[in-house]
Length: 130
Image 1 (cartoon, rainbow, N blue to C red):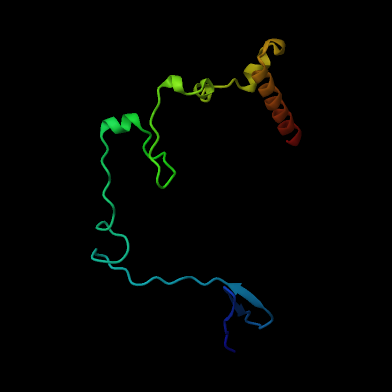
Image 2 (cartoon, rainbow, N blue to C red):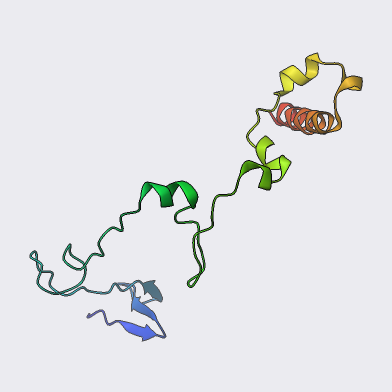
């Protein structure tokens, strides 16, 4: 009994040994011969673009690699006063739940009170699930 392969659209189907039904089989693309030396073909160090050397002045005044537009330029670094105040607080450490529990809830700022509610709720859910 020979096993024949059927193509349905992009899928290859082959029958089971018993011939009862068809099961999908994935086909892989086969690559051509690869030469170990340069001189043609894809890739290789000869075809790689040369790394662009940037001066220290350019690196210090622009955000290199931040441009996402094809015809755009890298954005310039502005003085700190040009950026919004909230930007400088993004990386501040926030108090963990244990520290928030020790403090008086009536004196906590709104942001910390909201964070306390979220962390406390999360801890109670984990405790009930275990």
